[in-house]
Length: 123
Image (cartoon, rainbow, N blue to C red; front, side, top):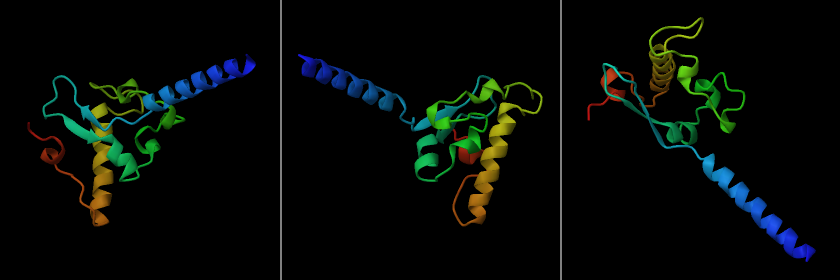
């Protein structure tokens, strides 16, 4: 009888572990956009930046102690309309982070978009 309970408990633990792994998988593409923006949304290839380009999570998720265990939305600190304290507006934070990194990649001989219409593509 005890072995059946142990087996059932083991199966439940494995099932819960599998569910937690499935929930932790990285979404492939995020649409970066907010209402009233002048340009079309940006399709940010999150998974590709992590897996292929090897960008450290802390580059973007700089305020999250363990980004692989969950992150806050950027607009928690980076307001859409105005700078808050030492946190620039969301658009300025994205552009500074993305464009500076892309320029470094271009200098290293890798192709990365740096012009508006290369990221903000019309549908």
